[in-house]
Image (cartoon, rainbow, N blue to C red; front, side):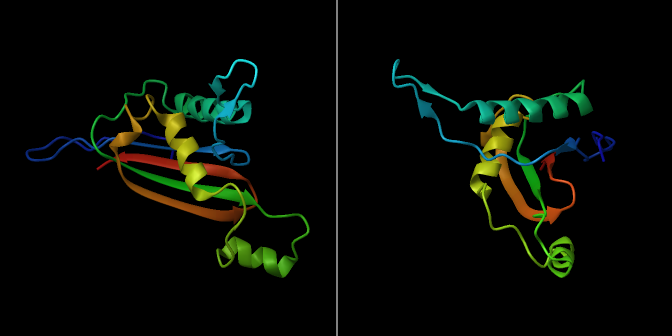
Length: 152
């Protein structure tokens, strides 16, 4: 699961790069910039910066010799949320089967933004290269985020 896939080059066949990894821990959504009232300058909240930095660290740990993808890319994200402790066994089983999905924060658009901004200039040169996007929120025992970035 944590490997780069490059298809062999034959006549008429192109290289396809793919990065795939999971980062353990609760997902954090991208927070909007804040204003410093004293200086009047905008800044990114610390929690957002630390999560983006963590994503980059997990990526670099799994792909120490990475090369940013230059063409069009497809990004798949699955955000796994921890099952609340007060949940009944019956409801927990439904959550694990995928019959109940998380409808809580962070919003899907903020999950997309934090993952793409975290991988910018690492897995790909710029997030404008993203032409396909899949995202899903699920429940699981272990909270984490799964990211798959592939050339298309």
